[in-house]
Image (cartoon, rainbow over the protein chains, first blue to last red):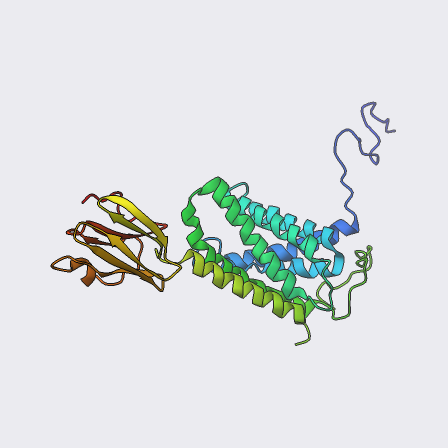
Length: 205
Length: 121
């Protein structure tokens, strides 16, 4: 006959003091999935050699623009900042100057998008938001570089190069994003993120 | 290409114009914007190169005529025997100097970059 040991605790109820339970909602899962897509693009982009440090195609911004159109600014901000954070951890550049440059660029471009998202959609498509965000991105980065890393007026000589890169890549990214954005005008409130069980293909229109 | 809206073209054009303006203003390559005219060692006049004009500068030998035209400056005529300063022709870059020693008149162009720390003559 087995007698229960006096020290044996009940097996099915977890001790609440022994671990922290984070309940991830399906909204969290969706944001994480989109951030992972953006992250994948930035890893891919890391393989492309760049003529000048800081001149990058910014392919992950395509995802962020699509998210902005489909789910609104708050979701896009989540995806963008998660991408910067996770990208820094993945590349091993977390808290390095490059990481802060990416962060300042992301914050400035999100700030511009918060304003420009109210532009009438009949006249302004994804290319507009992409170009504006790209210029805000380089402006934020150059300001950070000037006030923190290289406080030298000679930085001004690099301005035309970064401006050209912002214009070219902003346009290209905007064109690619526009391809995935539905043509019908977006309702005022963006559609809610899919509930669990409602798996929606991110890229289908 | 119905993904591109009219406002997109506008923003693209605005971005292009802004980039070109930036390149032009930052990469101007040391061009001058001011002419400093000295007579007898002291500054006689400082003139911007933006307006065309002709100026007569008095000296011991007579008047030296200085002409400003098209963002350039030169000593047009001078009562010196060998005319070195006149033969120098149009000055364009910042830091360029034309000196008429006999008449004690000098013309110097200045801009953002200072070519020489100081000149004594």
